[in-house]
Length: 367
Picture 1: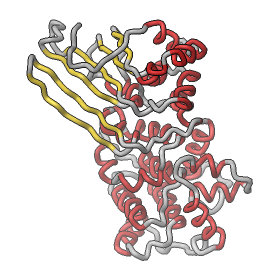
Picture 2 (picture 1 turned 45 degrees about the vertical axis):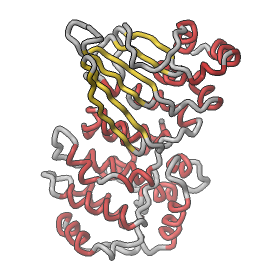
Picture 3 (picture 1 turned 120 degrees about the vertical axis):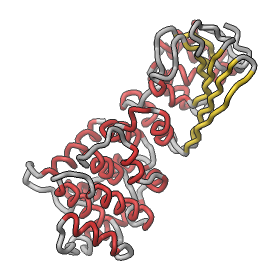
């Protein structure tokens, strides 16, 4: 295979094998002897593996030109990955993947080259992202994917540019449009350190939910998504963010469902964590009528407890928010209210809202 369009690369199978086996002493020795290898691209041909985010798109065999960090992330080699995170600046360096689009596997006839960030090499899983979380990886850097399709001497170019890893995954990974997987992969990224305060300022919840396929009439998954970003520090005192949540709740009330009680719980949590909804009387009126709420109780919202809660939530960074609250030396009920906006932990374990919140909390604690 002679792909002249590929960038310069190195062939060093012993080093790649050492990375695959998570053989840290070998990798350290190689990089100390030849420091330039840390940022070099290493060539391999993969006959079978289909890279996670591009399953169904890339056609094996694929040519991989990855940095040592890229291979460590692909192979989930935790020790090597941690070493590279701490001692190199290659976690954002582009990797390259090429596949042949010609039916007879004639590369010169038609092929494709993808330039991708390393985190596009795998689907988001808690185990894979754990070393990134422990080393405070920045998930909120811009991500760019470039695609070139070559046909003879001609080529077409396309590009995906996003503002964070979350948005990259949402844009290029088809399963992310499934409501269940939306909640799962968002939980993985937020728990690993994606900044929820920044994320909720960039995405439109109503458009996001409308894009999910197949169409979901039960809003439980979407309510779970909104609770997730609340757990991780969404700033509901920001009027733009508050409007985003209120519009999303209005949208969810239009779905054919009998489970309005979980929407009521979410709306009350949003109200308690906001500075008040007086700026949006029309939207609030629509929600109250749809959910059959006669009057919003101001007791919790105006209490000293929730004044402190809103202040504390505003002071804590959106990256690692959930873990910061979890480690606080405060009683369980205050911690619960800080995370959820729900004033008290109900004794009734059959309560649907309580079950939803407790289930999400348990999953996040386990991660």
